[in-house]
Image 1 (spheres, one colour):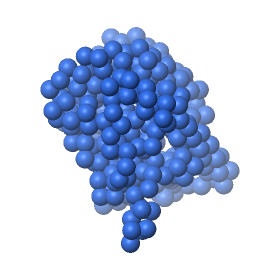
Image 2 (cartoon, each protein chain N blue to C red):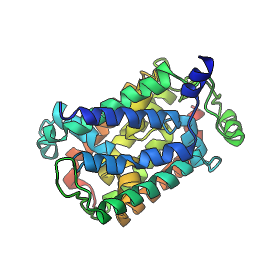
Image 3 (cartoon, chains in turn blue, yellow):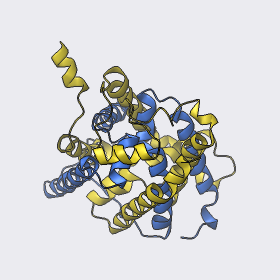
Image 4 (spheres, helix red, strand yellow):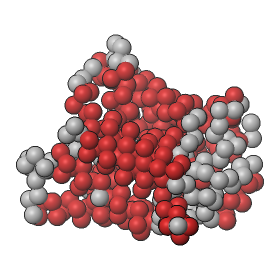
Length: 136
Length: 190
């Protein structure tokens, strides 16, 4: 039951993604064609909000609800980041969805996106299986 | 009543949605040192359901149940905002995009995706197969390979000023732009 807050956080996140149309195939096309500001506006306000929040957390030494120190592990570069990133970009333009929006798209009534999601799970599985053989 | 409904139905501008999305970063950290990142949930679902002989999928996924709950919540959020209180009109994209998509044979329809492409019937066409099965596979494979997606690298990674995430986001866009101009038109002609 202690985990219920993450379900609620997810619901709020899903509502914002949907109401702002960030889960829309049309909006993603508009973004990749540089014809609208909605998606860029979202990124350009979400990231500074995140930066400012992390700065405030450090400055005021805000702790987690469990009283632990807030920890953000560094991301180490490997060649999978640009290679995988490009592959994901191709899929993003086709499906109009990154992983989060896939779930929201299903919720809005596009039940067929379950197939897209299952295929994404297959992709994740295959990538995990090939892990040691992929260049990094 | 109609005005209340129109408030609930209305799309939100970027300056409302962006800061709210950004608040997911401190929200999840304070709730329990959790990093925003949806593609990790895809791996957790794989580990929970079909680990098979893949060593990378043998880990204690139960520690990440929070992330599976989070994505289940996203689905419920999509249901509330897109099915219970849907925007009655089509997505208000730029006229240039409408014209470009029209030229490619994709009409602007009500809803978040073009029903003409994304439907169970569409799944029986070559176009639909490539868009949904092919596209979905690339999303799942690419995000795992890159170790994150738009939320993990794009929002969480950039918010914590990690340069590898900037590399990630740049290549997301490189792939997306390449596909939009050079691959998608070809697929839509099938």
